[in-house]
Amino acid sequence: MSVVGKVAVLGGGSFGTVIANMVAENGHPVSLWLRDAERADQLNTKHENSRYLPGYKLSENLFASSCLEDVLTDADIVFVSIPSQSFRQVVQQAKPYLKADQMLVSTTKGIEAQTFSLMSEIIREELPESRIGVLSGPNLAKEVANHHLTATVIASDDAELRSSVQSILHSSYFRVYASSDTYGVELGGTLKNIYAIAAGLSSALGMGENTKSMLMTRSLAEMSRFAVCMGANPMTFIGLAGVGDLIVTCMSPLSRNYRVGYALGEGKTLEQAVESLGQVAEGVNTIKHVREKAAEMQVYMPLVAGLYEVVFNQAPVADVVKMLMMNEQSTDVEFVLPRGDL
Image 1 (tube, rainbow, N blue to C red):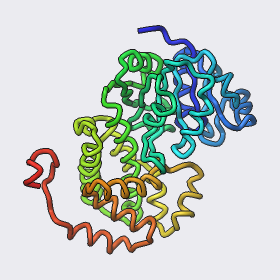
Image 2 (image 1 turned 45 degrees about the horizontal axis):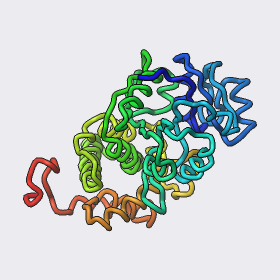
Image 3 (image 1 turned 180 degrees about the vertical axis):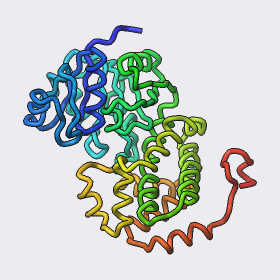
């Protein structure tokens, strides 16, 4: 494995900041790109991201800038932590400052609206010579910032990239596992956002522990069924990037998507729920895109269909729940019985 020199992180949201801070704490030179020059200056002087991680002290070795060229020049690894709707645009802006065989790692859990492309696919389209990885797992940014014990997955078909990311991020509180199923790991991190909204909604409505357990396990079945039809390995979904990420996102009020669902359950409109969050909740748009893709591929996803009706058509939750409970009963574990016996 080659020695990693400079690391760059694109995106000054909560997770991008946390990734850059971990790299800095581990003694590697790292630069963080933010669109806003004033916020970058504030981060450099106060060592705090007051918008996304207020109250969390950042490493003095972390350098922030609004200049892409300064951040990317001579970088060996680039983490891209940009919301899905802006991801392609930022990658295009970064092109002139990237090497031909650049190591690029996406941490974004979302889908591009027009193309149904995952973020690694966008990188591959825009930078076909690059070496691509995906970082995903049960990683709530504020808990990582607090040094809570955490594990994640780096997925890539490039062994050197996997080892390099493990090397620069591993610490006494952050463990990095490896996978070669880039698509499955990325799809797991994207799909679970949908079900986190459902979990927040059910919690606000006072549903019991039996209900939450049923919701999470059926969500996992639905996720893996869809992912396999898209070409992923179903075994990926029993790991950190699948069931691990699903559990933390469906159970924690720190999850942005959970909080949107909870606000909906309290009677707020979708606009009010998203506005009160103040950050991007990728799951809202993912519901739309996955529902359309599932219909196109004829994949049975009753939770997605029901949640779409609640979120976008203001359907009464009680009516949707009744419809879900009256649906045809199938096998418990999707891949145990032959498909013809489901």
